[in-house]
Length: 183
Image (cartoon, rainbow, N blue to C red; front, side):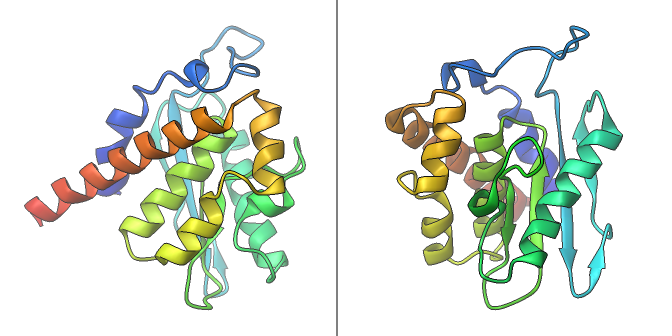
């Protein structure tokens, strides 16, 4: 949880509208979006054992349902690495990734725009050793059909995607360094 909180302070500074040219707005009642994250872990036959909120979640119950669904999609489809591969908005969103090494464990994040969720959880998992570098490369490749569809959904160029990926990766790597320094 400490690691999660370390990078949240920097993640919340990202101006998502600089990367997502469409679909970034307040909720219908004017409450701002992207003010918190919720992380969820499923694995070893358990779900709900690791659901952690961080920041302000305008609708915590909705966030919990979305983040748990991301890991269920992975558990239901042993042939996929990430929920991105089965994304079908508004029922299934990206932001959930299976741990490397043939485990049945997965992590998911919700609260940022869809591509942000996906990149945040991928960077966090790689830094924690839950996702191998080859799996990280596979999960974050911006040219796959499913990533193209996600980028088109928010009108994000390939260049904007690469830049956002680097920014998120650096934020999470810096948080990991800080944590190691104090461990």
